[in-house]
Length: 138
Image (cartoon, rainbow, N blue to C red):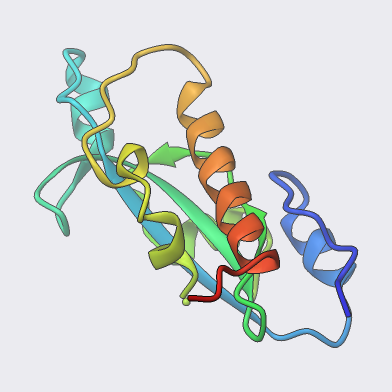
């Protein structure tokens, strides 16, 4: 039986609450970017964990189906997953591997267009969900 829950970028807690009876996993993913020229942006985007400049998203996925249900807004890589989840009102980690098969998510992000970083992650999550809905049997 397919869930009617759609991936969402806003209202993370309400999106999760709209899918009763499901177990969810939350995980953060960092994507490398070019080193920003602005000093304050350099400091905010530098991830000590990855030892480079990154941007980050949190993903909430259905534990059983491994479909991505919620995608947080893209933020600076310095922010911890827990802090990002708390800011998004989530109190709930595995589908990231399915999203990171796409090179545009895994490799260094070089595009400087405003809002395009969110679009990339949304598209990768949608493609992952499509692959979960229609698996290819070899």
